[in-house]
Length: 469
Image (cartoon, rainbow, N blue to C red; front, side, top):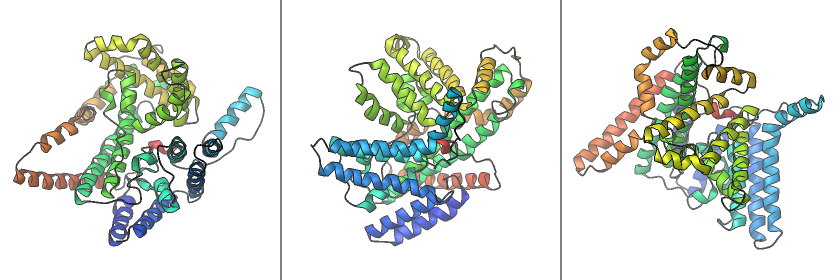
């Protein structure tokens, strides 16, 4: 099940609210949340629950084992076991087929390719449980002795299938003891509706336009059409993923949980380094704290560490060579910026450094989009004028004209307009004005819900882009 779904909006979530708030005992409330989370996760394929419960159970016991032997060498065994079992689980379901295919190509063997279905969200929850075991070993958190509370941390449906990657240390003092408030409920509903609008009205629509260009016949693709297709994918991916993150943060606030921001308007960045401080912040933080720093960070072999991290970042996103190329592509730019380009970009007028970021991002998302390397090469050839395709595209001009207001708004809200409005509203002193703002926010949220409902009714195109991650 996903958030941008009528069954979730009008059956699952209301039922969850009703049972949760009718239950006064906190222990029973946690049981309700776990039951709904497991049902949410089992909606597509119930067998996937086995992998989720396996990951959660082994790391519950890993935490206890590490704490019991804290300060002794044997405690390392708990960390190693957590890494081996969780990464083994991830490899089996996500990468085994890719590994066997490449082994067959390399050695000319005929090993049968495993046909495992990918458990949704496995890359998110395995990283969450790994971070828990490592943090217990490092003494950053105490081991959780209640299995039910730990299972709630692992399975909570708010951020289970599309992140953000929430570390136990971030919710240690509220998981299982959430305190919902009316203020939190209002903030959460508003945030959820903004995320829903991003997904339904922007990401899905951008995906339809994308389908006419990069997803169409590349032999008929014009040069401007290739760049427009890359732009549409950039918009779709940002609004889809940040929209899901907004919905996750909103759901958390409704139930008394506080999750860290996962996006901070990445397209306003002026370098690749800044972009990756703003995009998928929880993933970047995970690789920084558990891989980059562990390898030596900025102290030794910095450029080796950068490329290892970005190789793994690319691989995390999918079992295909284009994701690895995409990761190394960004690793290269981050290394160059660290060498000299970063200082140069700071001295340039903001327009030029921002243009640089947009250009490398559009190319980067093109690499990310095409899993077939032949199609990727053809698309890049068209984009850079090596395919002899026309520069003029009448059909594209018509498409842009017909969607000009949508396009302007989609691009405009990649900038921090909403935080600016919130700051203006927060500065209102009048009590009557504040009441009017509260009613206004409720009316806007209701309007967004109704608009998105109307767009979802009978709509067959509602992709979940982060399913493969």
